[in-house]
Length: 225
Figure 1: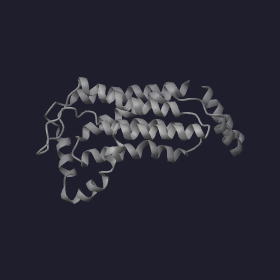
Figure 2 (figure 1 turned 135 degrees about the vertical axis):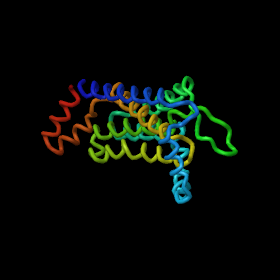
Figure 3 (figure 1 turned 90 degrees about the vertical axis):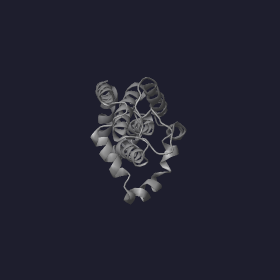
Figure 4 (figure 1 turned 120 degrees about the vertical axis):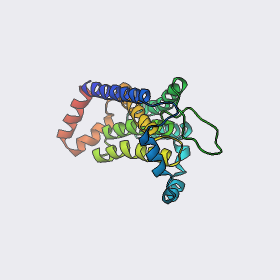
């Protein structure tokens, strides 16, 4: 399928960029950009923002985003829509892949007084999992006709951006850890959609048929390439 080949090419590019970024980052000497962003994120004026974003912490844990993936897949199944397996797989892969990376790659987290030293900073796990799930879910929901193009783009981009910003504001990760999470999560999400994403469900095609024959022909051609 042509669309799948494009997805896999983009996923490979994102994964390669994540690897190159990791190779460029020293273990315990963050680059200037990381130190400047950290200093700005810890400004007293942003304390209310940091407090408001604390509820995001459990959502970015595996028990949070994997649960969301199962609930979304269940909702799709009840609506007789396709794509649930791709969404669940992307959430699990987001957790497993980032944990595997941290077994072989070490980077020191931002040091905080009174906290133990941690060396599993890259990539940000919260950001990786959220990005993987968001990218796959956005593509599935758009393909099934449940989200418009603009809404699917927002779903693919906004949750990862918000989660990444939270991890920097919470002083748990460097900004480059978050970038690594975006790249790794995007690679996972695109790969899972290409590998496990299904053709449009009959119900999605029926909904398109009611909107007009041109959309049905376009949808069928997309599923067939």
